[in-house]
Structure formats: C-alpha cells, structure tokens
Length: 522
Image (cartoon, rainbow, N blue to C red; front, side):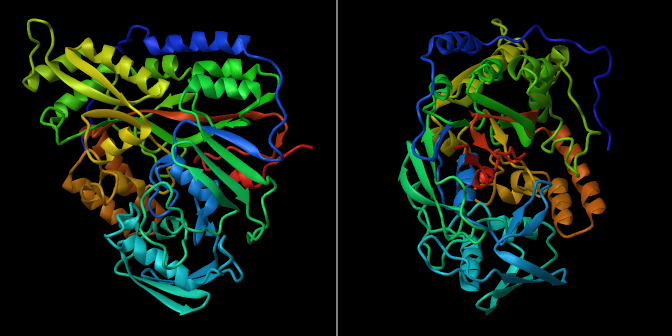
C-alpha cells in the first residue's frame, strides 16, 4: 500500500505552552510549605489515591481503567495474563485444545467465593453465557462471539465449542468469573462476590472503595490486611496527601513535571517502568466535518507530537505511531507518520472546502476533556495548535463519570483518552471493527472500513503468530492513513509510595494485582 510522506525538512513548532501547566509551580510552592512528617498508617493497611472513581466493579461490565484494575483484585478468570501478556492458568489449572474449535478446561478444586460458596463449572458457564447475552450489554461480548456452546462436563470441567477458530480466546477468558445467578446490575454498588485475593468491605460511590484480604484465597491470603482506595480528583490534593502521609500510594496520575519534586520527598520511593498504555486523540466520524479524512489528516499535521511529548510529558513518554507500543510483538512501525507541517494542514483544509474566513477561522470544533490537569492542558495545547491553521477549538470539561458516559454514547467531536493494558492485538477489533460500535465494543467514533474489518476477522481465525503479525501490520498501516485516531504517545508508567512498602511491582498494564505480594515493613 502506498504510504503518504510529506518529505522535505522537518518543521519544528514553537515551544508548547498551556496555562494549566502554571499549576505545577503553585503546587510545588504548596508542597514546599506543607507540614512535615508522616503520621502512622492505619493499622497494617494501605491507602491509595485515585484520580477517578470506578464506574462498576462487575468484571463483565468494566471498561474504564480504574474499574478494570480494582475488579482484578476482587475476581479471577479462567486464565490470567503474565508480564509478557501470555495467557497462563488461573481458575483453570489446565486446558486441552482438542481442535481449533474445541477447548476443555479443568478447574481448581476448593476455590471459594467471598461469600463462602465453592466455585464450580456451573459458575464459569453462567458467567460466559451472561457475557454473551445482549441484555447484559457486556463489552466482552464480541470477544466471546465465536463461542457456540458452553458445556458443563462435571463439577470441575467444562468444554467450549466454537463456530470458527478464535486466536484471542484464551486472553479473553482472563475476565473475572462471577457466581451463577448474579444479576445484571450496572451501578457502581452492584458488586458480585468474587474469588480474588481481596474482598469488598465498603463502597461509597464516587468517594471510596475499601477491601480486606480474603483469607480463603486459593493462592494464600495477601500480605496486606486491607486496601483503601480514596477518590481524590484534584492532583494538588493527591500530592499533598502523599506528602503528609495520609495517602500511601499514588499509581501515577500527576503531571510529569512534578515527578522531580516527588522524588525529593524523604519518605517516598518512585518506581518507573514501561507501560502498554497509549494516549490518543479520537474523532467522532459521524460529524460531517470530521468524517472527512483530509480534515483529520490536517489536525494530525498541525500537531508537533515530539514537542508535545517533550513539553507536556517531560520525557515520561515516547511519540506513538499506532495503538501498539514498539515492544509489542505485533507492532508495525512502517506506517504514515504525519510529521508537524502546518502548511500541509492548511492546504488539506483548503482542499476539503474549508477556506479561512475574514477572521482567519475556517470552522469550530469542541474538545471534550475531563477535569484532570493533564486532560485540560492537552486541550489547551490542541486549541493553540489548531488556531494556527484556522480551526477554533472550544474546550468543555466534565467530571469523569459524565465525560465517559458522553464518550461511550458518541456525544463528542474530539476527545483524548488513554488505552491501558493493551495485551492481545485483538484490541484492534474491539476498537476499530465496524461491528464494535457501542454497546458491542469501543468503536465510539463509528469508524468503518471494510478492508480493516476483513483483516481483523482473518487475524482472529489464525493461531499462527507470524500470520497474525502480518494481518495486524496491514491494519495499522490503514489506520495510520485513515486516522480515526491521532496516536500521541506511549507513556512511561510510574508510581510513588511510602518507602516502607515492600515487594510492590509495576506492571506494564497498570494492573494492581501486584499489591497481593506487597507488604509493609514492621
């Protein structure tokens, strides 16, 4: 396929500025004047500050990062993904692949739900069937669509028959299992019993989630007796609470320019590591302006992503060319790059029929942001970059719940989000297949390309990794031309925590299950 290339010298944007970044200076002054010392932690437990609240703790319904990460502490799947994103046994002790369309799973014996009931094959079968039921509206339904039947063989064994080969099946089965008979409640307080290392003690929607170690976990109880997740939307407050010791762990979520100040706190350690997260601009292709690929390409050409990463992320990210990070086995780097070129952006907008008016404005767009500092800063940088090529941008900010509800329902023009925990490249099907428009997936911008659909479907039906790599590489090349997203950066993961926390590990996915092994020094 021919790939576009603007050629010529690389143009550099002026240094990016955002009024929101001035927040950092004020925060640093507040940090310097904050009271010293750290109070004793609550008895043996750990307090974690979150930027936003989970929308649900039902693993069948979780899509946002906080919901997925917290439900991972409460539930187990048939499989789990290891640090290389490979499926390994979890509730299933083993499986046999009788053919490309038949799998038999044998369960661990003696696994208990938090309410005391024993896990059986009936619970697993119920969970899979409920995910497949359109009435539930599970975002996982598409990943299990090829499962034709779920047959309980005995108390600890079941068989799955597929209508066609489905390479991502084992990764999809990492989703949490709930007890049979669990209803379809969708509110944040509708939490089924799980089998995970922690059990739910208390949930106050939009405020806090309290967990306690589950002594009956099949792998043994966690070393931390309790976890308290507090929702603290304001980054300044999260940082000051870490400084005072009323918060023990920040799993990221602060503007990168504050990290040097965090490192100087005497009672705090900072870990950094690679992540599988990708931040992007998303367009709603239902919009008559943004439905034109020339306009989307103009937006991409108006952004200096290298300066964006350097100035906004302060080196804690690398520019992205696609959804998959360069370390991923299916990554394809030979795609259209769209380097910073405002002259090209203006020419594309002229060709699309949007000449500049007497005031220099061609048209206006609305950027939907959260109330988080980084989200608003990105909006302001986009606003200035697009002003230079004649596009007026209005920024509208909402708290996370309202924001995410709008995005899922397609109520936006342009927004920015981060995909977290990208493991199997079948994520591309979930995000870009035309059949994945919500509620069947996360194609929230209603992108449609029959060739992409065909390639994604073909990649699902072959287990050969090299063949899958080739198919997904072609998908990535088309996406780089069509630009339903402008991929911005792959972030470096970091966490800051009290220095007597032991054996805490950063996982590329952002998964918090490493807290199961962590402990506080006595």
